[in-house]
Length: 269
Ligand SMILES: [Fe+2]
Ligand SMILES: [Fe+2]
Image (tube, rainbow, N blue to C red; front, side, top):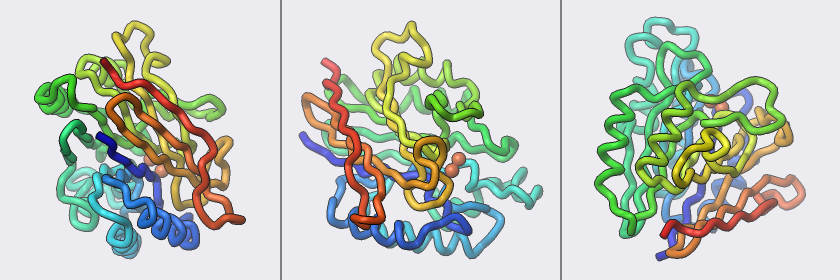
């Protein structure tokens, strides 16, 4: 078994979007031909504006398929209180994906998406009790022979060097759920800086912990910390015996994303 997942995030179509970087990303993504493209939220800069949604839809159409996508907090309208409260993800559903709980499944691998962006929170994210129960039910359907990967937008920890706390609400319960369900890998975004770590840094009493893989912003000028003004994505290879994560950073000189760090984790069992 060998599957490759290209993980991008926080494309932020709108004023901070970088068309030249997006152009390079699209070309490189088609070269890579991943088994799955994951986009972990924040498709637009401001969900109130229809033109940003149309452009985000075009960007998704230009990227390779299959795709597994989840919404971010920027995909919820900020100014339109009516939409924000009554139909916060209506535009996301119309332009990006009707499915807020996507599942990608192939022999030996399942990738499950969850929505941590809600109408009442401006920046933070969370999972509701109902979502937690649903995730638990789905993940229980797969045995130890299947590599389980979960995708949501908000991180379970704030990487070193980021001043403001960007961690989702209920992070301890979320990482306990991943541990209980034997999830090997969590993909997320939101902080605009890439990071690879383990949920054991969130809660020390977990059984195995889950690898955390965050992507920075792949196509916008909103990079933070050591990725200030930079763009990143991750290429993940899942094999029978190991999970490889390559952190990639865009460089103007190469006009493409180049590998800046490689991590290898043994598979469970
Ligand atoms: Fe973002
Ligand atoms: Fe975000």
